[in-house]
Length: 88
Image 1 (cartoon, rainbow, N blue to C red):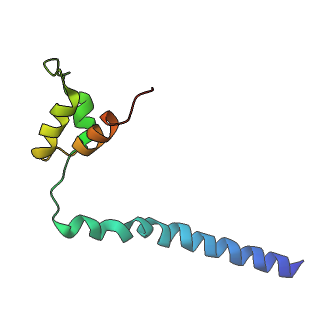
Image 2: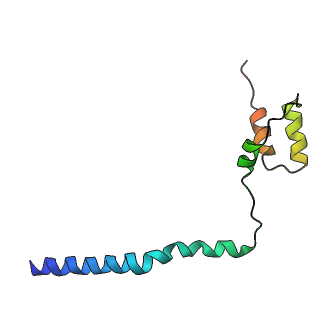
Image 3: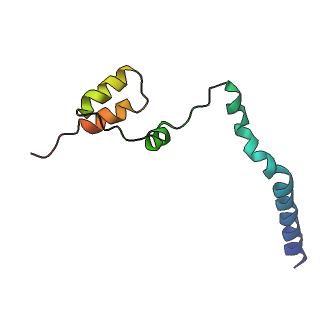
């Protein structure tokens, strides 16, 4: 019985050390990713969903082709979606 009590006490001590000392620093392993001086960019999908609808476009495929030429981040996805063949 004393052996089990010793093992339990040791387990509680190790857990306490982990929770109180090590766990607060475990999220710091990824902090160095913020030091690459990359420009902070908004999510293109959120920008697209928050923008007003475009009502003047009659040919979506041509519009996304034009957007691809200007480097729009969602143009490849738009072209892939619009080039899916319809049913026969």
